[in-house]
Amino acid sequence: MTQETSATSKTPSVLFVCSKNGGKSQLAAGLMNQLAAGTVTVHSAGTKPAQSLNSQAVESLTELGIDITGEHPKAVTEEVLASVDAVIVLGTEAKLDPIAGTRFEVWETDEPSERGIEGMERMRLVRDDINARVGKLYAELTGS
Image (cartoon, rainbow, N blue to C red):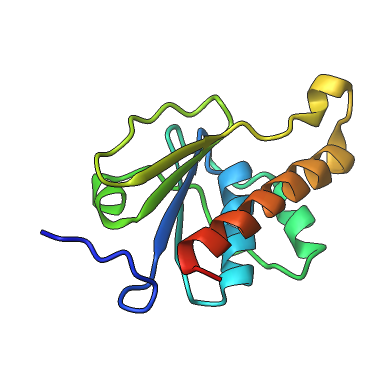
């Protein structure tokens, strides 16, 4: 099976993964969905899904006009792993093995809590770090 990677022949797809799928991977998915506006298929999942989304992650996206209130933490599945062009692991908690033939990156995202920054200020810094990385990834996936 050959996989076409040209943006003109196939919509690129990405899976964002973190451990709980309640914060960082949801942030990345929401940001990519807004930026790509349908030009990239976006998935998010967790290696150990939480019961609910991180409310501060949801609020930090709402500040940018992104509504993810209908989302919920999901587990990583073999089906999604096999279907995407890129797998992006956010943070160092989630452990996932690279897949042959699939772009695989680990983003060691900013962790403001290590500098004593908590609450919404922390979440905005995490969001903004992820947003910059999502913009670069989007350009690479779409050739834009």
